[in-house]
Image (cartoon, rainbow, N blue to C red; front, side, top):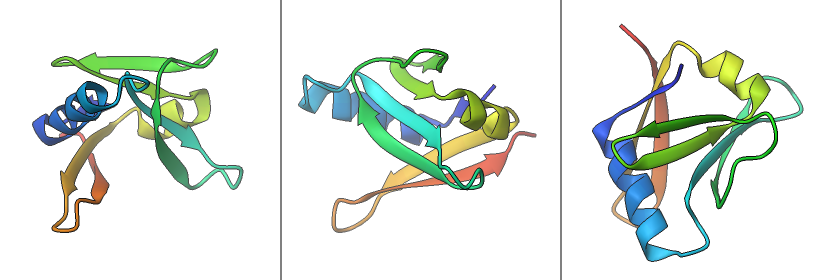
Length: 91
C-alpha cells in the first residue's frame, strides 16, 4: 500500500483546511497506463483505495493503486507556491 511522507500529509491537511470542498487528494492512472494524475478531491470514487495517514486522506483508483503498492509519496511546495510530488520505492 502507498505510504505518505510527513511532507505530503502536511500538504494534504493544509489543502483540506483551506478549501472546504477538498477532503484529500486523488491519484488516478491516465489512459496510457503509465502516467498518473493528482488532483484535489472531496470523496472517494467507486473502487478507490483510501489511504489515511496522520490526518491526511489520499484516494487512489484501482490501476494507480497497483502501480503504487510498493511506493512512498513525497511532496513539497516550491518558491512560487506550486505543489510537486515525487515517488520513491519503499525500503
